Image 1: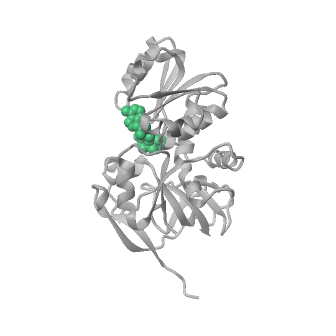
Image 2: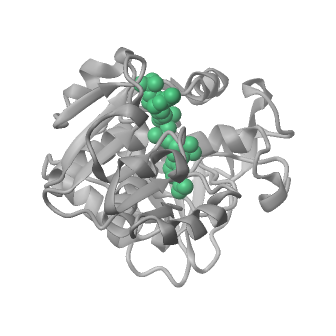
Image 3: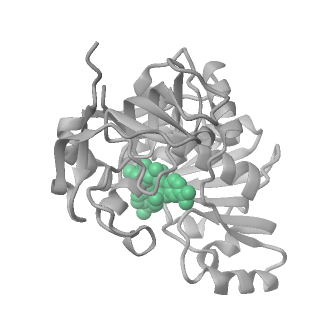
Length: 320
Ligand SMILES: NC(=O)c1ccc[n+]([C@@H]2O[C@H](COP(=O)([O-])OP(=O)(O)OC[C@H]3O[C@@H](n4cnc5c(N)ncnc54)[C@H](OP(=O)(O)O)[C@@H]3O)[C@@H](O)[C@H]2O)c1
């Protein structure tokens, strides 16, 4: 039998606008001892993908062109490194790749065992590919940073986007009272997730609301601890997902704010967490909203659309 050695991939040879992608053939990578080679069915776009395409992280990650972007995958296991024990060939997995720049915009990709869990069997591959990064982010923010408990009040700013729409559902599952914030354009969608209260940020300045909250999850990163701390109950937590230089100053400031805290969430790979997400999805407790579906050939359009920053849920790219 003829062994396939090449794969189709969307690569970038320089940082830039959504037009920098080229579709090309590449050699299929070989897994190291601690890696799996997977055949990618679908990936989804996260803001980190278009930020990296623009070169925002080049001082940390370098410029190892040609770069294959993309972290989220739903894929089939093809080949195992010698140290892999949790998976076998033909398993259908989902997860977040842990290579520098990801690598999901290709027919085959590599990741270590900690990236993956078995994909829920009751959903489409494109839905499974839409969950991993946003669901891990929402879970780790609400459970680990906010330490969310029943009856606590959590405000989710950016509730219509990838992270936000999953965070609304998880916070409800955890028994919290949820105030969801988005634009009027996405109001019906966000209300379908059944938050306790909806605020349209185009109509109301959320910094002037009367309610006090235990957790302010600033998913869209518009505000800061300084701007929001008056909305927090004593001991309340402000969480953002964008590390900023000012965070050190805010950490010092929190000492003088009645135990109010500022925390930054950086998603961690954890296959127990991704398994937990898969279980909730299988049980019908968590759903993902797909806004647009693209394929590898129109990856530039997909990035352009996602970069506009007003998607309803997630945008998916079908690979195989
Ligand atoms: N640190 C980490 O590990 C980590 C992990 C995942 C994501 N992130 C970051 O988290 C952020 C959100 O990610 P995402 O996947 O949810 O992005 P997304 O899907 O693009 O969603 C962004 C949402 O922000 C909302 N928005 C835009 N302007 C707003 C405003 N002025 N006020 C309130 N909401 C506004 C939009 O809602 P409307 O259309 O209704 O305006 C949109 O739905 C990104 O910056 C991403 O890089 C960080």
